[in-house]
Amino acid sequence: MTHSRPARATARPRRAGRAARGAVVAFVLAAALAACGDSGDLHGAGATPTAVGPARLWPRLPPASTPAIDYGEADTETVKGVTAPGDDIHAVDPVAVVRAEVAAHPDEYSGPHARYARTARQIEDCGKPGARGRSCPVLRAYYRDLTGDGKDDLVLGIRFPAHQLAVRVYTFLHHRLVQVMGTSDSVVSVELAGREVIIRSPSTLPGYEFRTVWSWDPHQNAMLATRDEILRVRPPARPVSPAPVPSAALPSAPSREPSPTLSPSASRS
Image 1 (cartoon, rainbow, N blue to C red):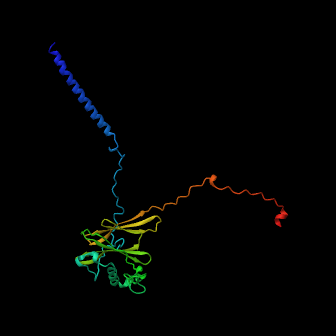
Image 2: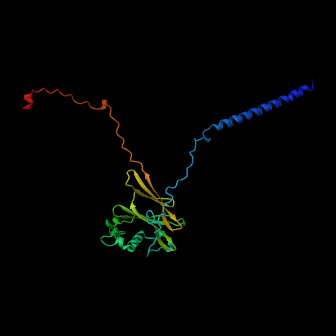
Image 3: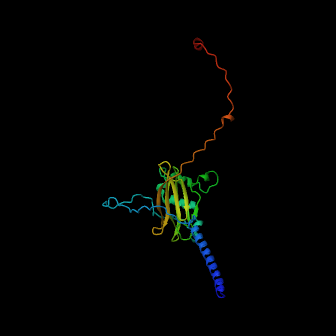
């Protein structure tokens, strides 16, 4: 009897400890199960469609012999007579660059029937004070590293007749100023995104625009039209019609006396 009491006394704390540990384990499991149902878990998105590879149509067609479309890509041109100390593109005069282009292409800029004769005449106003200087077709110059060499490049815009805009990109290659991109089109907007030039142009399809992305290609040492898309643009928002005015707020119309009835003879007279 004297030995059984200590044994029972030591057994109770063990059962109490096991019960406490069991309660802790049950709490942890309950917390884990509760965490499994929160919004941060992954949920199934349903059945995945089977991937289908492209099917080549008309495999016996002969290979193409001419390019499908000419973007003028990879057509680079050295700007003659324009230099800068230390190949600093910021020291280059944008108007001098455009004048060098006019001098290098007399068939497009010179003569009364030249395509851009009007632009050549307007360039003479560049840099002049007064009202005539405002007709200069050379727009503000922008600078951005588009070639990835750690140095800024020059982006120019030139207004052409018929609401056309020419976009040019220049960089120094082997200590020579080189035009590495040249295009002209009806333009909605021109954007710089990273090392890309994005040009948006209107489309003949209502509600659509063309979007052309020009990127630097180190193999060609030129900016290439790497993406050309036609995109749906958001239609203009409709004007909000004014709220109808309650009839109680409108002024009442004046009462009219009934007109007397005329006889046929009186009405004819």
